[in-house]
Length: 365
Image (tube, rainbow, N blue to C red; front, side, top):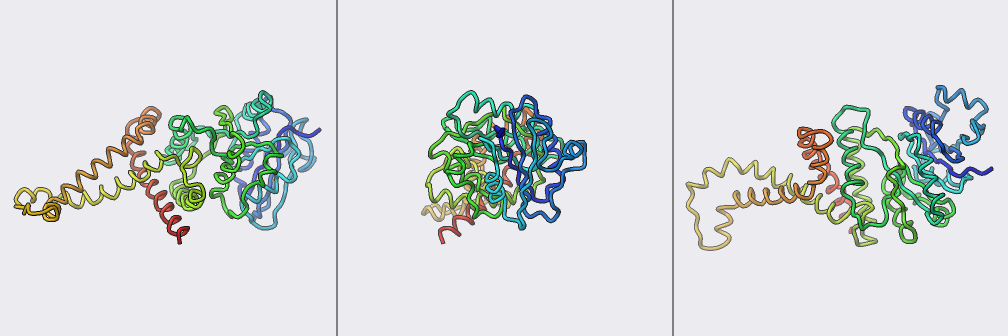
């Protein structure tokens, strides 16, 4: 009998996390019939079933049945082609009516597959569903917890309620197999995890609604600052090309408000640094007699004060735009964490702005 769901997992040197994911799949409760397809994307160390109690239940081999619902198959790519190619290859061998894309570093909750299947079963018109990663982190480090709260707040507290579709995020996202194939799958020109999920979202949303399901959950442990900052830069860089095709903001990647928040964040950093440099000159201004003959002479005399005032205006605008997230951080982690989170946000907005600016220069050129 064909499985109801085909779970497709791109694997590239992910031996430290794949075991937890497979174990969490095995621990699913009230799940429909499903198969697991691991696509080894040219790993230097080939995929092997993790040595754990999970391994002892798969002695029949990769294609063997663990029970009536679980089977594991492996597709091997001989060189690293990127997650877009890996996912597309997984779909080619999938037998399920719906495919479910999972990153290799997430873990399912016991009810995740049950809740996902119920959405399809309750409404036959649904063709695509995206889930959510929870805000809790095992790590006590600041940045992973900040990033988890940032994502959760963006999806739950701050989303454009009028937006009818959501990012088809491959941490956990599902689609009817025939629809995925008809749309042509993921764009394989992206060699790394960049904006292939955003680009596919746009193609899905031209014809279908993507259902956002907060009860279809995964746990994801976030990385440290530099890997995430690099991803922000690259996603902004490649997203500008998608924006130039569509000429509009959207509830998928960047709303207009989020774009304004980025600009005011960068403005806060830029004018804030200049203001700090000019502060020592402000006391001396009281002893300076300015010529009031024209606008240029007035500005040349009072420009330090003008810049300080302007930096305060931008700061307050940025605080207004980020008020929901700041309040959310205070509620979850306290005022000290929120203050640190505010400054961390400014830094990340600079990476996003730099990526978008570099992309605009590149694509305009």
